[in-house]
Image (cartoon, rainbow, N blue to C red; front, side):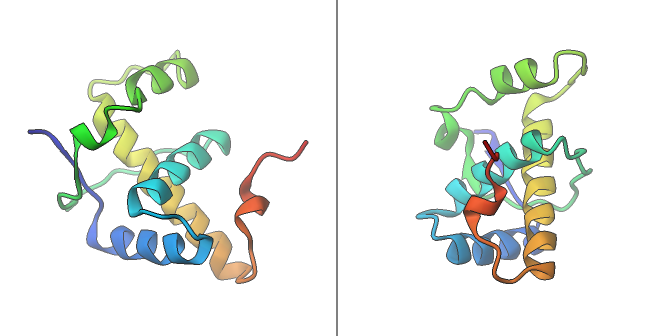
Length: 114
C-alpha cells in the first residue's frame, strides 16, 4: 500500500491548525492546506523524513492527480503523489506563518474574497 505522510514538525503544526480552525480531522486540515497552496500559487517544498500518516485509500474520493493536471498543466510531474504531499506541506507551513503573525486569523481570512 502506498502511504501519504507529513514530516514530524509539519504533522504537529497541522494538528495545531486543525484545532485552531475547527476541522474535524487532520486530513481535512491538510487538504485545506493543499487547496490553499494552489490558490496562493505557493511553490512546492522538498519533503524529506516524512512519516506514514494515511494510506492513499483515504484519499480515494479526491482525484489529486486530475486537480494537479488542471492547476499545473505545464508542469511535468514524475510523481503526482509526491507533488500533492509537497503542496500540503507548503500550505500548512504558509498558513502557520500567517497565524504566527496574526494569532486572531480566522479560516475565512484564507478564503477567496468576492
